[in-house]
Amino acid sequence: MVKKQCYTTLLKLHQAHHKLCTVGLKKTATQPVFGDGNPKADIVFIGEAPGKKEDATGVPFVGAAGKFLAEMLASIKLKRQDIYITNIVKYRPPENRDPTPKEKIACAPWLYDELNFIQPKLIIFLGRHSMNNFFPDLKIADVHGILIHQKLPHITTEYFLPLYHPAAALYNGSMRETLLKDFKKIPLLLRKIKR
Ligand code: URA
Image 1 (cartoon, rainbow, N blue to C red):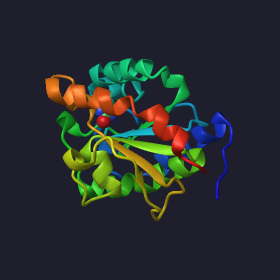
Image 2 (cartoon, rainbow, N blue to C red; image 1 turned 60 degrees about the vertical axis):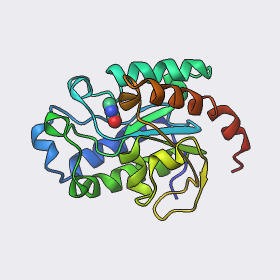
Image 3 (tube, helix red, strand yellow; image 1 turned 90 degrees about the vertical axis):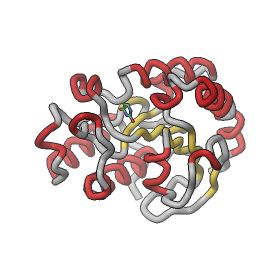
């Protein structure tokens, strides 16, 4: 199993997967959007796919959803540098369409390697697409804000927290309230998790 190492090696991991990845999205995206943040983080957030701004900058969650996420992190006294954030697929799908199952499968080894390099205590799914990639039968409306303890194939982390996606909650009053409330549970849930 790969142990926690320094950032340059995680960068090498991303560069190697970018080279190897055969997903068709590579042809239409401007550039890959690697995961970003602290490679020794206790928490990894997983979104769906880069959007327009992420594609232009090469950094995940830098648009409106990213700004909202940064505000929620601040509400629990965390900064982006304290956590790590990545996406299921590392290239922007054209017109921001949902990534196809084939595209998600093509990017899966990259995500698994990335997660096993960091080995976070807790993985937080941002939205149903991210959650359904690991738990295809769950409904986000039923399980948001509830800690899941489950040993999965491919990854070492055993604790997961599904949340609504910040982009979906941004302009929906009740979803926004729910997301803010769920987010506030993170520090306590993290303290409960034993390695
Ligand atoms: N939404 C995502 O799921 N990922 C990003 O990087 C930006 C917006």
